Image 1 (spheres, rainbow, N blue to C red):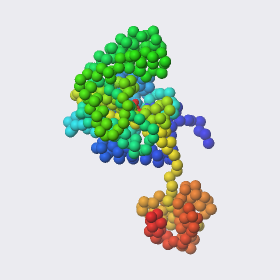
Image 2 (image 1 turned 30 degrees about the vertical axis):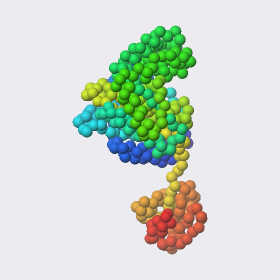
Image 3 (image 1 turned 180 degrees about the horizontal axis):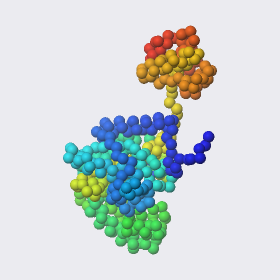
Image 4 (image 1 turned 45 degrees about the vertical axis):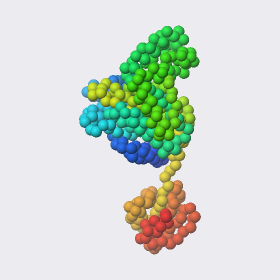
Length: 414
Ligand code: HAM
């Protein structure tokens, strides 16, 4: 029966059949990140709008047109979080984590919201797994977080993934480079479409991202920050590369790599997957050495990443198969229904997945239901107190003492 209400555009329900693969992805991520010392944190799904305007940056697409912003009953402007890094930096400061031994290593999973045009792998409510390593500028952190995303991708066996690496230099180097780039774009304004021209002053780097042919031709000759990295920035980037090589992680340097958030400096990276179509990035991140200061805290270098759960599912074409039920307990006559509830509880306590008929079906109906649930065994409680165990694979049936069901089934499971 179709309801007159539909799920909102760009959002989706996760049905019980979809939860198995999600839980698996989250479990792998929690194990990989947990083993590396990242501890879980969660922050609210909405925050003061100013946190994102300051943190993510006024000139970004996110702040300009993608935020779900609303006024609460006290006329305060709140925003459904479009990303997790700014809220985590807020929490880091609010809970005095700068006083702990640095770096502080945090891990998160949850929903995020961006008002984007929906397409495969792009939703308005999506889910990220992310980590943040806050409080050290050592290239060891850069290498650790990048290697960790590679480990997660390998543990999930996602095929066709490549790592692209870039560096934006320090904040000062970036500022002076941006002036050079703006000058270059202004000199070539005649070749650029209005959309790119309008962004010269606010976000010139985005011109590298344009799909417009004329712009691409202009950008092929544009100055590239990576060629002008200053002493310490160049050394830092070199060190990151040597560490990745020592870890056996192949990468390609992408001099035009840009990311859609303003807070990045120095190392940025993107893992792209050839299974994803237009939205080819499965996950990415970078350093954000100026963000905590920007939010009113002390100078605090940091780096992190986020990976999209829906993109992982898309890349893996994860089957949304129903879980298999181990034991279905059927009551031959209504009198055995009570006993069936007791046997099911016993089996569940012994860590079997076990179920019974709650719809008061006939025996035939119960067996059909057991089949629908994909039951491995059916335990039939007979009217005279005896019981039969039916193997649903072989369809063989044998008498069993129902009081020994746990023991017999544990043995059968092997
Ligand atoms: P981001 O690049 O905006 O970075 O998003 C990270 C990942 O989230 C993307 O690679 C993609 O897998 C997924 N994603 C983003 N937008 C959507 C969408 N509309 N639909 C589905 N998936 C999406 C950040 O959010 C940064 N906070 C990452 C970071 C952490 N940088 C440093 N620390």
